[in-house]
Image (cartoon, rainbow, N blue to C red; front, side):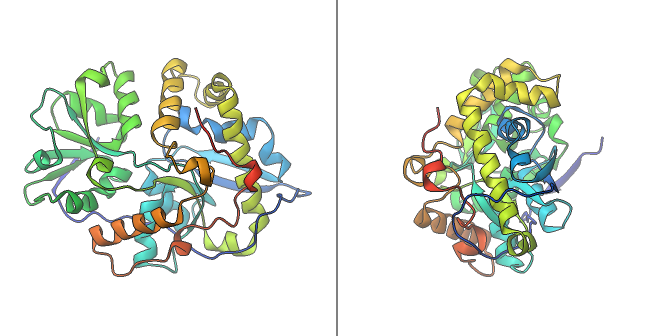
Length: 349
């Protein structure tokens, strides 16, 4: 295992493409099945259950999609893998997409179903440490996976929080080492999504409620969206019904998850038998509550965004990262493929 350690520098993200088409309509039922490859944000865990339920309950089949879903290695990486053509769809971080749309608009994909509407980005530190606020991160050794969404957003967070980054060092390591690196004191803070850190720590034998303190980006004014379904420009332009059908299927998978959490976790276990089902159910519930349950959900429905808030989120990323242009909201997100309003989900747990 190779660990890399470097002085803090401006961290960049990559992703991929754009265009708006169509209106709201029921998905077409294809005669044959079209193969599609999806890259997830992370390993097979509770919060991926809706994708698996959509597959197990035949919803992808209903819209003519033969879906393959691969484990991912970070929300930011998922965007780049769609942009690079390795995958047809990704469950990735919309903030990585904003950065790509600002720097390489011709390559940027577009988000067609926004799932995580609350900012989950955080730096986890030991509760026993003297790091209590963002300012206390100055001069520290922090670490995380290179493609972690929170790590990629750290330059923006540092800007918003007014941090002097000259003395901050970043160590890169594989994601499965994160909690051990923190627990052993090899780094003083780790980047990640709050529930990813919380439940991975729990699985490692730590008590996250008593042993870990979270320095959350949202507490410092970064009111951002995060993961959504991202597809490339070519698919949006050439196969709008395929996109619409995929989103319909995933939306049905979320509804089935809410109706039966145990069945949802069982769907994950069919792909990854070694999971701790009790912990993954907790992780699923926490994700629904902490990362997907913004008050706007009651009016927009899952998958949609609040236009003003989304525009402000773009401005936060552009200003904090010093990006060369501010992409229009429609370059980053379109509601053209969302389920009809009466099919959307307006309440979670």
